Length: 264
Image (cartoon, rainbow, N blue to C red; front, side):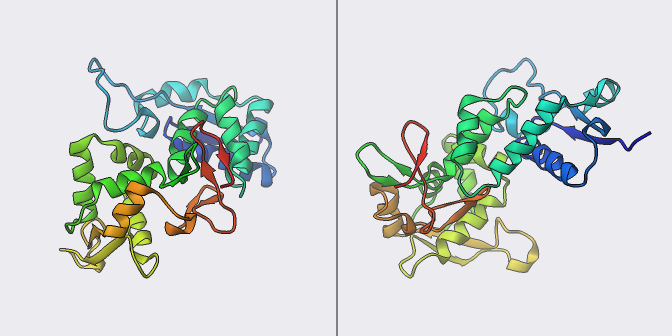
């Protein structure tokens, strides 16, 4: 009897993309596809209350209570679906994000995560309007809207967003809480004329409280970038997105109003 590898996947986007990676690595290790059993869990139950949740379904943990039953039903993926996962990982890690974006727009049978994945990833690329104006990414625009001229910890920034509509929080529920302080650090370290300023927070940096160890405020330049747009992409700090890079000087990408990626 050959080896059997069981991978349990929920509807969480990071786990779904992780499944693509696992398929690719197991292929490299020459483990036969027929020996790989994949268990897919049900999405989380919202119960009778159908109001919109702060955490999107694709960023929530799945129902672990279904695991025993799903294990008895588990089978290897069909060959076509397995190789589609391998190809998706290759496109996810590619420096040119357009093939992945096209896959997400068209959809691929057996991979319902593609549409919500691109909805998330595209929010980190700078935008170009039909008039040609360069705008901050949707994420950075929301971040700078939550900032102000007053000093705030990252925790205070996200708390302000939660009170105003939770748009930033929904992205962070997929990207991870620590994405926020990291992005604020990017902005504070970028350019001599910073759009975001930083100062020590109420907790020391080595205390293990990254959401409280620094405070940030928006400068007049940051307000102009938020309200008027960018003169050039490098006005904002670069940001790795899968295998690509947002705000890159060497390989620039902008999100058009129709959802496609293009060169500026």
